[in-house]
Image (cartoon, rainbow, N blue to C red; front, side):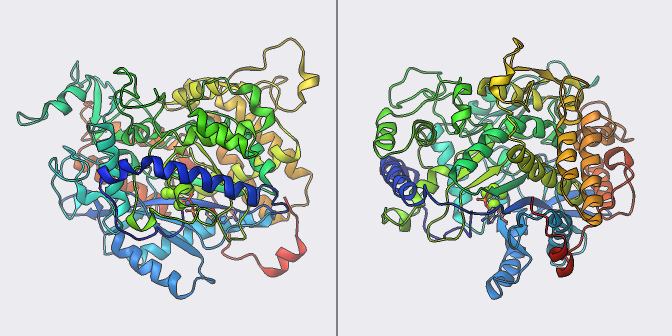
Length: 634
Ligand code: ADP
Ligand code: MG
Ligand code: MG
Ligand code: MG
Ligand code: MG
């Protein structure tokens, strides 16, 4: 989203009473937008990454590492730069959920030249340095998917205490002060999601049962603790009760501009089966609330952390006040494909309001897009500002964006913003963020290259949506890259007509087989990328950079290198202070994050995570001469 609009948030009661108003006008706004922009053509490939960071404060005497709640201060300075020179800055900074979080993107999107791959990592490094210059001694910017001790005793700097009777979370563990204070959106969302649900959010993640974890594992939250948490906490699980446990995690996202709406729909669909695969491959968050969990990814944690569904909607009570049973949280994997090719794989029943659907189709919107929008619009607004209630539906799209931007799904179909030169875009949202810029750049370049390969080879990766859902569950399991198989399309290269050889369309592969190929059975995504690159005239630097990145992806997939999650686990369980009790103490956390920091700053190497070839030819600017001479469009 752009700079968050300022304003005064309405109370939950007021917001709730305006839910139908927002929906009604949001749909009208989408219809108007669609009529204006459906035929927009000729946009070129542009793309950009979003990296989220945490501020960590080390105390080298006490041997502690804590989340530093200074993001708002730092952001103020970073945004002044943008305000003063919006056209020439190399980075853009935005607030995120945590008072310790920042989101950084390149100052301008990248374009469709292969040479742009050389700039990605350098720009990420630039961002890291730029923000780091504003930090206090011993304060460090880290791209961690989750901070291991979020919500554990004494995890913030300055120190805070849980605020179970507060306005927003009412959490036993995550204080409201750890929510970004610089904009009312985040606290308002937290309060409204909790109030809409009718109870606190409940996140239960299986604990890693190391040999000294008691059985069953059940925590005592103290005598004063209200029934709600005691009932919600499950045995053998790490219990969390606040939006901050999920939305306070960091991720890596990518947005692509398509040449028109059709191409955007194709990319949206084709990237969908890759979401669970990339989630497994980027797994980086095995620790929650100071414990080792039995999962490697944040996904279900965030999903539960913003699950605003009432008991009726979750199927625990008969429908009475609510209209629908709803099978997923508003943060989850997508439920339907958008392209004609995808239609036959939409095998999950879609919940939506028939009247909204009819209104969309009566206005010339086809079935697939209409059901997608109608399905997004089963949700109520969970944050509304008084200044935004009344809008001009012919020009504004705020009510549409209100619902769209709080459907946090694996993929997002982004229409062009009003009065802009931006086209139809697609966002790829599953990836966990990695600790180094090298890894993040590798993932970003791999996905961008895949979009080019998919479009130019007309690949078809589609499998039934129900199987993508199954893969999402598998992807989060401990060590999924090595231990799990995933549903994937068997033949992605030949068209449907030629494919009728009696074999099932999809089968189960390991991540290694999907990425690196399986002899005579599956070509592998990286070999396809390489054959695509071989057909292009790639300059030497770009070739070197891209190969370093592809090698990293290949070795992570084959198990030759550890995933971030596997490496983090290994570090903790081999720490001298670790007692096989799945507990991450202050000291273990301190030593772990110090080591991460040394790897990021190149003070030590980490071949088991990164391999030995971690140098790319990355450069902050592409020499004009190279850009001209090597003008190889993707
Ligand atoms: P959001 O948080 O809504 O996903 P952001 O504005 O934070 O969106 O990030 C969007 C990403 O899209 C950034 O990396 C940005 O560089 C990139 N981007 C900007 N303009 C375009 C465009 N026209 N096409 C594709 N990507 C773009
Ligand atoms: Mg963003
Ligand atoms: Mg965002
Ligand atoms: Mg973000
Ligand atoms: Mg985004």
